[in-house]
Length: 76
Image 1 (cartoon, rainbow, N blue to C red):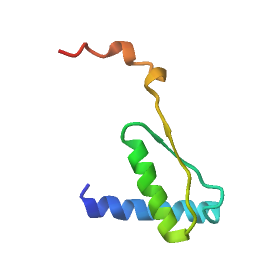
Image 2 (tube, rainbow, N blue to C red):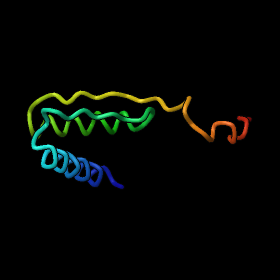
Image 3 (cartoon, rainbow, N blue to C red):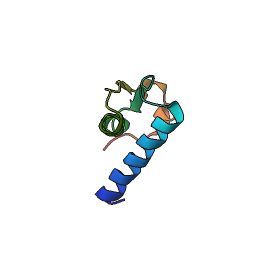
Image 4 (cartoon, rainbow, N blue to C red):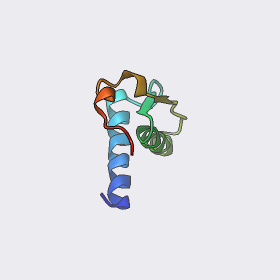
């Protein structure tokens, strides 16, 4: 995706959240660390731009909960 495509997708997702939840009053976004947290913050910024209120953002680190952690090859 190009930067404009990502921006457009985030705007659409923000609108869908606001439509479904009838506003941002009870919205909390949680992103999975390392890249999902950036996406959650960008989405929260977009919701705030559209609706006004600050949307809380949390980060979830799933490193310790992965079931494939033992399957990864050792780093060189």
